[in-house]
Length: 115
Image 1 (cartoon, rainbow, N blue to C red):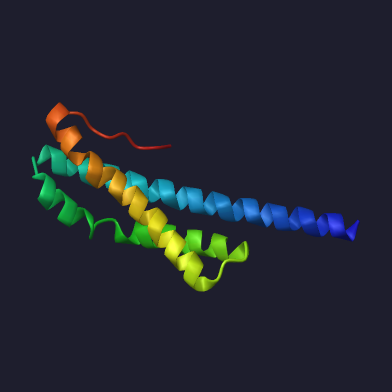
Image 2: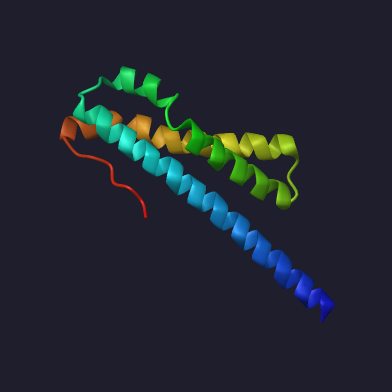
């Protein structure tokens, strides 16, 4: 019985950690949506957008990296592995916007926030 409760508590903690990572990912993504829309409205060039995007939404990016790192370390990753993986995930979110910017600009469309 105690073993079952331990597993249940560990599972609940793991699910909460995963939810935190997802919430922070959505927050970072939505911040980038707002930034992308503002830059599209200002008709910022693609290279200028890519450069500016690197330094925007830093609080949201840092929160995403911290929650993914925490999650990975809870699953047994070393700190270095967890940090590397979390940074790669944040870079992937950023890349989705920097890679799509020219397409949004040429088609006069806008990204949409996640809920």
